[in-house]
Image (cartoon, rainbow, N blue to C red; front, side, top):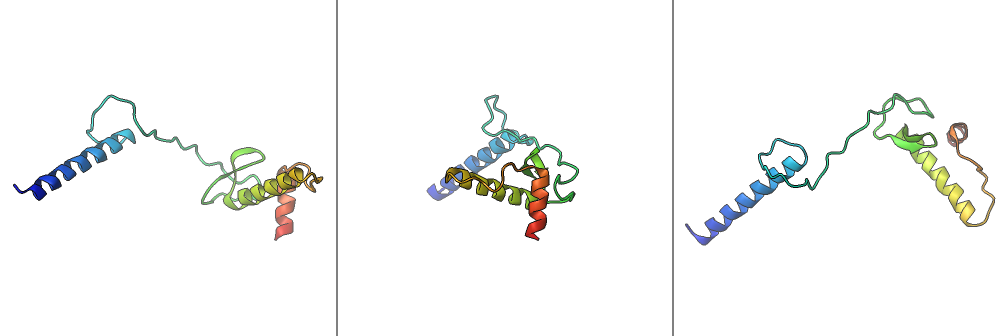
Length: 116
């Protein structure tokens, strides 16, 4: 065997071991064995909420945090809510009295209607 062939065999072996270890760490069926601590943990995904608390839509690319907690707003409403929060925090930081005292669902709905 040539030196190049030996190097390629070494690379293939390392790649196979790395792939199996990653699959085992992610809960796959890799036969990498090893009883050590896994480098990666599988994230549990909560079931998506039934509908957006603001606009009542049921399908969205991503569920976002709102005034009612995590995964309560659709993507669009969540982005709008985050913008309102940033606007309010900026006003507070500048010593101004924010035009928005508290951001709740009613205020979010009214703001979204005004933006349309």
